[in-house]
Image (cartoon, rainbow, N blue to C red; front, side, top):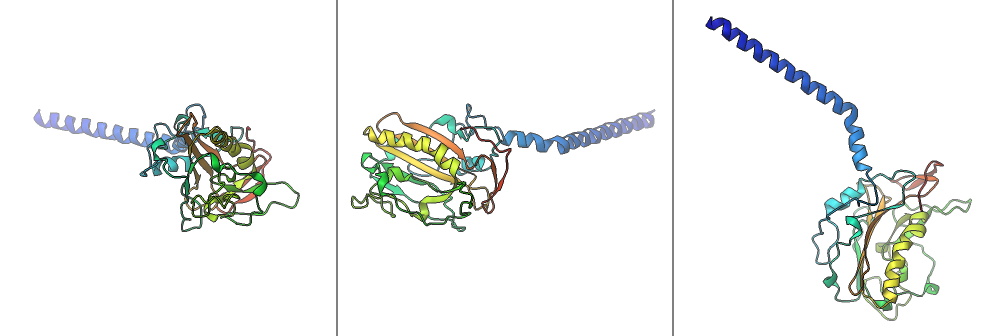
Amino acid sequence: MAKKKHKQTQSTKSTLFSSLVVLVALIWGVWGKYGGQLKQAYSNNNEPKSGVVNNANRANTTYGGLSKQDYQKLANLNFQSGNRGYVYVNNDKSTLIKNAWQVNKVIYSNLDNLNRTSASNTAFLEPRNVANDSLRVRQFIQPTAWHSNNKSGTQIYNRGHLIAYSVSAGIDQDGQYNPNNQSGDQNNPKNLFTQTAFSNQKVQTIFETKVRQALKQGNKVIFQATPIFRRNELMARGINLQAIGVTGNLNFNVYIFNVQPGYAFDYNNGRASIDRSMQVVE
């Protein structure tokens, strides 16, 4: 009898093991079929109302900013045609630290090993930095992935400023305030990246105007801009802009997609191709 019971126990174990193998195989098969779609759906969750990076961690700096992990989350976002050209970050709340403002200057980050402006530029601004637009000069810097606009006259590419020209009066290329430099920051390779005309002229200008208006009202502002690159691509996928008023209620944190209606881009080299299906809500 003991031998028969032993055989039954072995048979039961064998049956359980076989069932477990089948279950694991079934789960693996389902994930193989649908897992990629689930991950893609998660990465494309660009709903502006909720924000794409909530409760953001501050970077390891004395003036705040996003963490490397949060920048990586932004880099992995894929723009979906028909959506708005930007999303909120951290529920539209800046992670900059108000009391970090001490001296009127701009901290320019060095170019990376691919000559990209891939790190944050941070400006500590006051009303005297509002620039006179008539002092603009012709731009000649060619940032990574730069291409001339096509001969038909359609403007696709801009040399996008990280820290806007319009709030850079008196700032020299070392980031120091110099009252003799009223033309502001213009051809500074540490402050330019290849940006689409739509991203620059239709979207980024909205938030730059908020900064400029706060300064005109007598406020001091910390303003930070960070182009977001995916891995070793030479054209940024977008730019994170955030600002906080030291005196006043200015406070925003957004990620602007580097996209253009009617065009698709190879972000490895910045080359554009016509894509009539690409739509961006203004």
